Image 1 (tube, one colour):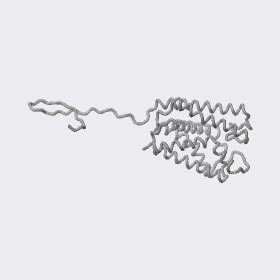
Image 2: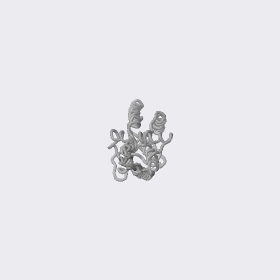
Image 3: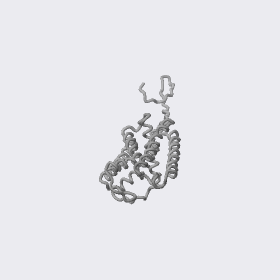
Image 4: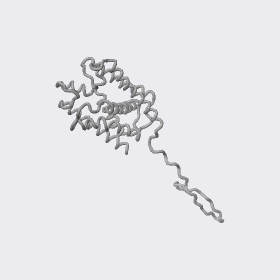
Length: 241
């Protein structure tokens, strides 16, 4: 029950943050780091869903809804989605806190969405995994398939930016930093992701999930007198005789 409540609450927070951000994007009222010319709605939404933050929160939303419905969920595809959601959202939290925070002044609804995406979701997701699992779910095959999404995001970001001159994050902006610096920055994020993935796999096999079974309690001894004064000592049992 606690697991369902935790994941259901987190799913609600992520969903509300996504809805706020979608409304801000649709109405073209989302704040920008630098003044920008008005863009068509299609362009705004393509850019919105190009952010690693948005993609990782979408994966987290899928994972938390599924866990709220079934805390013991398993399956090959499910394991990949769950790991990508956890890994992506933790990277989002770390990169935002160390590099991106404060670059845009946020107020009102934009601040609420940002707080949900970058401050609540990453650490609530990690804490929920530590507390409730389910475990074990991370093996070598899961790690290999989980690498497909980040690799695709990097490839897409560079290809999309080469065509449009737009990049979702300053540290990935080839127009300003050029390819050597951007590749070095993205490589550092990949190394961070690999370290986090290794830590998650190590913890996945060492942190118990669920309460351990209670040790068996030995039943008290009870004496039953027999005819002739002999006493037989037996152990009480819940079973009827």
